[in-house]
Length: 640
Image (cartoon, rainbow, N blue to C red; front, side):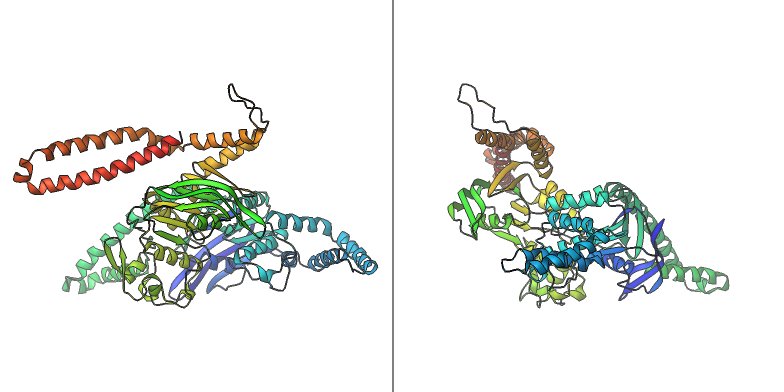
């Protein structure tokens, strides 16, 4: 049974149609993932379905009496409310009774409270709650607040954007609507909150339509994928993985059809230029057909371009990037990091895992010597150049233009050995030339992220620090960023709550276990999750005994198990890589020996000087390759 229907819907801002005579239907019990490039109109479609925005043409129908809840990317909240009051707003008339009961409960705990008056008021409120099934509703509110770690009595005015998003999400969930519309619900949520949200939505009986860049969230929840592309909607049954297979087939068909159309149009253009034949009466139909082809070609918009990412690692850093020895750090009496030691080597790809507020950004600042430790020592390596991506986007000047943000006082950007005009460089990140002089404050969330990436990649760096880089990026750009990071020759530190992104980019993790404890682990996100599941399933008996020694203490045994798992755990890709490294080293040694033998013949320099110079250059390249290959072999062998 349909709950929402769009018929022949059209919507445009400026000259570009976001909805071009589309049809759409949302049925009861469906979980629909809405995907598409940044700027294609996904958020606008949700606003149309909630009647926040009006269609230019077409019809919107909603089922009579349907309850709908909508959580936008930037949710509006009353700053004078507490979190409890803001969440309770989703309950309609019951909201006032619940908030009064909550306030009276707190007032009774005050030492100078008028107990008799407050108890009388509470009795009246209790009767009202019983009459409206309020106890069950209050329990639902308390559960949602707990799961999203929301302090009930904190004022909304003190919250950051991420916490406000959590409050808006909680407000929608407690209402138990028939239709739930979510715009990027996983932004700013940590792993535990994302997994809880997934489980809650899997049990949700209503219809769900959500926009997200989180591919695992899509895979686990979606029963149908709807793609919005160039004003048109295409539907795919199944989850995101099934969509990827079908999408490749459709793109191939579209490419073939476009090529055939362009060939016919080119033939007709040649014919019309023959002049007199085209003006004969019997050919007027063919002329009209050509005009239609021209109009159709003008109306056909090409698939939006792909972001062109490139990063110059510049001069290599020293082998040691940083070493931390017995480092501790606390804030306001709360221990963030306790007695942590690690060595970070050139080429390491480290993911930092932990809940929001655990101290991931603090650890990064300690490693990069931007923050002093309370105790312990931090040693930085040599020749280190750092590029830092800030999740709060504090690096952006709202009043500066896009061009000044990328190349202050210049019209050119130097990327390695290539010099590009700033307009051309910004076009690589999908910013049209007419927007180059626009101020930063005019950009959407996804566009700001692309601008930050453009600024980051305009710098030469051999240490790359990415703090939540995936928020608001579309899936195509995420996959391109993954490919870039996989090919990056420097050292990577990554903080992200995108599980697929972490798994595809990092080879080791530092996990925050709570109370200042940090654990290192060799492998990606999935490897860490499997290890955690095994550790939780294994009873901590402390009965493991090394041969011919006294019994090990339970704490020491646990630490040795973690250390052993860290060393022995290689991903499948890394195990295959390690298997092939001896052959690769042998091939490099053979090539070096062959070149040395050729250069030992003095006649080569007399008879073919250019070849001799070419071999000398290749020998230098081989020395560098050999050093990198041996270092990689050492890293992987140490974790066997």
